[in-house]
Amino acid sequence: MPDDASTSTTTHRGSCLCGAVTFDVTGDIPAPDACHCTACRKHSGHYFVSADVPRSALTVRGEENVRWFQSSKTVRRGFCGICGSSLFWDPLGRDWTGVAMGAFDGPTGTHVHVHVFTREKGDYYRIADEAPQFETIPSLPKPPP
Image 1 (cartoon, rainbow, N blue to C red):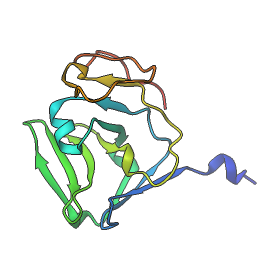
Image 2: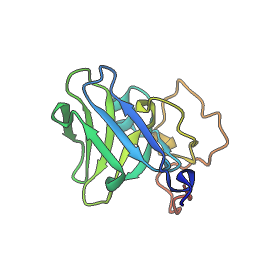
Image 3: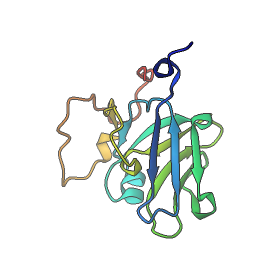
């Protein structure tokens, strides 16, 4: 008889502020990146920390409440159309979606692995963790989950 603990899969839940959009991520959450670019700061109100989650691992409920803003030719940003919470960073043509770390309901078991676009960061804060910092996007492989 198989051990249920060895076959169980972790599910991480999250939502927008008002609860009109909820989501589940099946499996471990990959180490997130912190983007300090002007677009991410304006979209989120600060720098944007998100984990690149395979589309197949992401289930969104209340999807009719998600609004999409095409922020460039290759990226759209998803937010709740009711409360305005920033939720997703979606690179078109990729098989993953960046999910906002602040939208998860509980512990995620992961930590920021890199800071990008630090040359555009706001002057009102310091980056205080030990994660590597890059002025643009580095050519680094994603860390293992």
